[in-house]
Length: 47
Image (cartoon, rainbow, N blue to C red; front, side):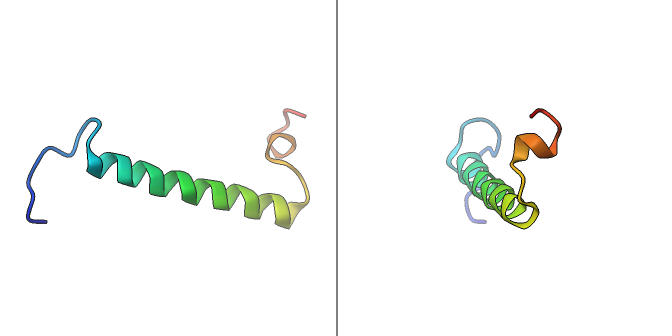
């Protein structure tokens, strides 16, 4: 990494990783629904 700017707060670095992890969580949630046949809320007992 050539750029040694701050990595905390609302920076491009933090927002990029936030977006990547959100996409990963969404894909895992959809895959779990497909494999189990239940929605996320019913899996954790809210429905």
